[in-house]
Length: 525
Image (cartoon, rainbow, N blue to C red):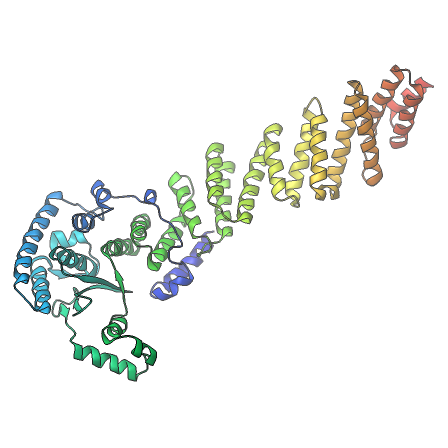
């Protein structure tokens, strides 16, 4: 499967710059990430993960990665931010023009908290050194606007995040990555000119122009972005961290971060990154650790969205080799199979897993001569693939061994009768027919010894019908001789000499070289 995964990952790398293509690989909301799937670097991150935007946003962002975090450093930052916000609340209340309110807020926050823009930065960097990117700075401004009470939208484009203050009216953009501009205010004249140019270029249709006002059209075509909330902004912070890890080839942390990103914001991009992480993890596993088994189970959630059932089956074959061939870890192997079976939705997939599991378990017990333990697995494997020649061979071998070691063959005969009735494919296998006849002969001998003449006669009739139906299948003269001799002895002891002679004659007809039948025939005559 490594080759298959490498091919899939090549597709991942090619597609990565083109977010709109991702729908073809992983559909939005196609994968479910549960809270129990998540792991946290430190306890403070876990405590704040399900957060209240008004009280714990800063805490969560600060603890999203395993840095040398300091609670005191965070508290100092929050205290300074609180003082700054209170001052801004007082000052902005004195300003009537909204663009001037935003200008004051922008400049104050930027001057006090933001020192240097870097693409690879997280919120810990912002708190400790004022190093920021568009995500962390937008989160800071969003917190400030939230507390002051200024309405805003968070805008996400494929490669950027920014804010729009007063989105229903002035639509003032807060651009955190450009300290020379910082914010933009678009007046009605600009919006009208923009819309008219798009109309002339036929980018805006006449129907759209008639049904939507200028603000609506400007919003739709100028920003070409989607609105996200604070929780989704935190998710983008996690996904950024994940990508930083990916670039450093730290695959496990990459997966841990993107799981949290997806949990908060199950968008197409996060689905795709989660899929990428799952593929990369399985490139290097040997399934010796429980965590690696959980990785495979997690990948099953992507079936039909970049992974198919054959991929999982190939991995299960690898697990089978590791747990049954290389070592004897039966209980762990059983657990893995049942876990995979529980997540399998497709019937063909469940059957393939079931066949591999039962075939290999049965084969292992057969090789050890543990025929009673092996048979339930061997039979189940045969039930999954009755036409499979190896499954048939194991079944016949196991039945033959049971006939050899068991004191009574009547139970095995009932089993073979049932198999012949329910699996017509066995009636095309001469090895099964021969073994079935041998089992009948052994039971004839047992029934007459135990004075169960009715069962004996019934089984003789079944055997003779079998020989008529399959004349090409030959049976040992010794087996036939013992069976028919025992029938003859039973009737001789009961004074029914003619019936005894009849069974001897029939036995000699089927096994003319049987010395036992010949000697008994001479004695009777």
